[in-house]
Length: 315
Image (cartoon, rainbow, N blue to C red):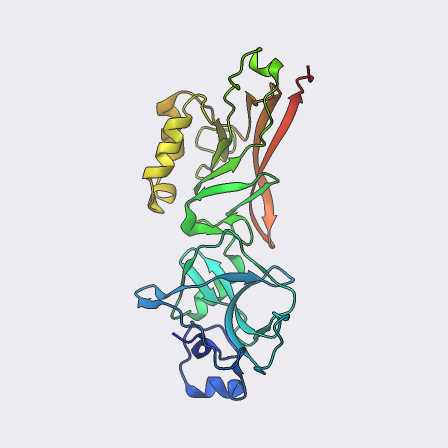
């Protein structure tokens, strides 16, 4: 598929395909950015829309862009990566949709989205009602704020990597995040004088639920933490590895049931889990779920911090 077929503009929100040749009237003078070079993408048209392999980028304002490889000229020098045209996309609970269809993006300073999926779905059609809902797609969502590196999220289908935000589908969400913990070189003091380093956790799972109606009750807006190798870590990781459907995170409050069944964690608006790293430092993973505004609509913010409580002095 040549992505140039997606390069059209309209005055209102539409799907990914043009409904008339007239929509391409502004594209008549555009060319492949590199002369005689055309990137063919593997694609499929499914019941959800266009399924295509691609790499998304962010513009200077954090908008998601699909690079079409088209430009107003085809003689760009080998040291330049500017000039290509792209279309704006927005992540929704039902996949990506084209946003700002009246505008095309011209590359300047942009960066690739490191944790974006290699294959995306773009909706074929967008109704007027759905177009209005785009402005409120983060209502009731969960924005993750952390300096830690995120390894995995669930449900991935509702995760917007550019905003680091989970979207919900009407009745709340169970959101799970796996983060990497900072690593330290074990000292002889931490090893107790032995040659074998103390095994240290390298990951933590933070999960939250927004399916309740009263913050502070077991069914309220609550979170919990598991640290690798401690408590029900293996069970929590097993849950993530086996529950692959979005319904496992939005159909019912499975997180509350899971925590109750393992009896090794607690749910509360704020949680801390203590551990000792490989150098003998006493550390804590702290999670806090609270109400906040996400791009002008009410939602939740999940703040995750990894802190050193007591440093182990070097021998």
